[in-house]
Image 1: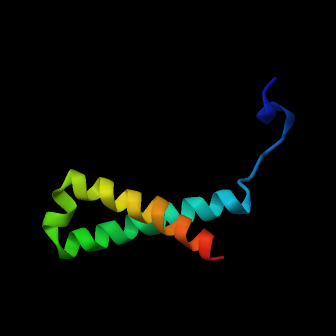
Image 2: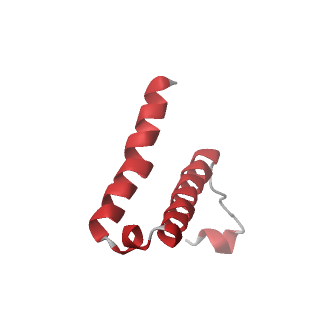
Amino acid sequence: MRLRALGVTRLPSRRQLAVAGGYAAAAALYVLIGVLVTDFLLSVFVAIAYLLLVAWIVPAGVRRLL
């Protein structure tokens, strides 16, 4: 049974939108830093560390403080 055939549309929850917004902000910041410092953008290891820091460690720290 397809939900679309029944006319049911499911919108993302606020939490899902917040997570997507966080990833979009992290990506925009990474591109901005990459424009200013080209070596930063070209390193795969720096990109992995950046994603780990911005998308996992910082939000975990903020949740712990709140």
